[in-house]
Length: 303
Image (cartoon, rainbow, N blue to C red; front, top):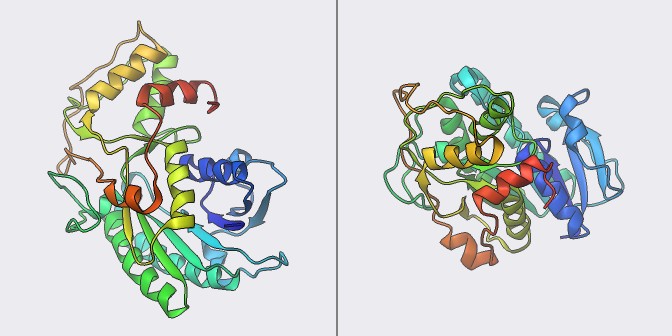
């Protein structure tokens, strides 16, 4: 891989992937929304070029760079948090936007389309999340992600492109949204507030964004056409343990309120990725422990 295109590159995984590609001397074309304050998260490396193009403009995006690209990474998505996850009309638009992204990948010369999926595609599962685990999503976001996987695969193959789908379990790291559990807990503890949680009995699998980025690069280079990979650390422990780690690192004298919030009606209680497939195909394995990842966030993402 010499050149790659990334949409939705201003969050934890996208920015980490840009840095990973730069580190490996790979040119990056970033599709970003004009005027977004999050564009400041994008590296100003000479290997990075910004192209202002939001989801609604993907259909018309033309390759005016004079270069041909190899891999197209599609992370951009509308309605990822809160009530928007069950806005069926909005989530349905993401299906259309993602098909537009496949067409754009073809126009930009890419041979491979890689889509970012989610554990939400599975619904509630009491075991390892494997590529072939039956998927029964319980919200509009998960339903749309599952649909996009299937439809973009068919669209990519019609256009002669490889298609790879990576289901992200739970990633944390620099540039993650402030509403995420990890970032909101860090911010509240810094302010001396008492963050509130459920009992924290959920068995959870967290992966540092830098490890996720390395996985996406290797999938772009070595991933198999038509495959689904599940991306996580491969390990799970109670959410309360992660929360306690954050408190101990950020503010050892701080308080946390476990059990202050009831579980939701469709609370996912078990997340653990089976990373055997991605490991065997690409050689990838996680390397950053959770506590080290939290310290890296506090240092501004510097390892």
